[in-house]
Length: 236
Image (cartoon, rainbow, N blue to C red):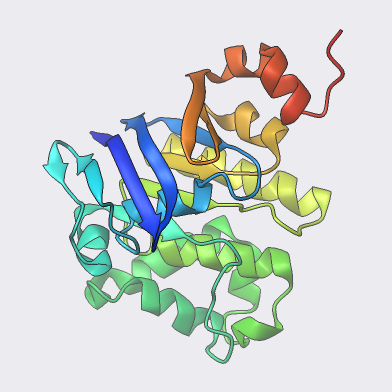
């Protein structure tokens, strides 16, 4: 299995958001996508998941083109997207939010919900509670759980640690590692570069819509440009 972007260009009207972006996520890999605000990271995920359509280039899963397909068809192909800001349905219960993630096959929903609850016991305790009343960390758990209900092969994660307390961040990244251990590949957008590169196999760095750096995570952690710009380290 491989998710591949090749020379992808995306525009918002007359503004070019991605310029010739290429990346690859192989079977079982966690790939981190780093960059400053406005670099094009969220645009990249939205393009993969069908929320945006490239004006040129290719997006492929297992060699089959995805560009131009509607978002629900891309979910059916095996890609789930956990968006920035969680985007839970606030007036619906935790249980109902999870059912929304299983819209393609409600017959297996009960077993999948119990697996999500086993992964996130706090959600099990709040299964009947309105999602809008959950804490930020609990809403992030719910957003990840809802995406897992579609049984993805590739999980797109957009800023999963944003606005969360350090202990909750540690728990979320522990769960990310656990999910990956089941064989789910991941493309991870994350401002916390330390955490992202700690769980990733490989990484890419975007600057103003262009890919400027890529390589194994341990080499990116040692790269002076990454250390200075994204890890907050002084480089002599």
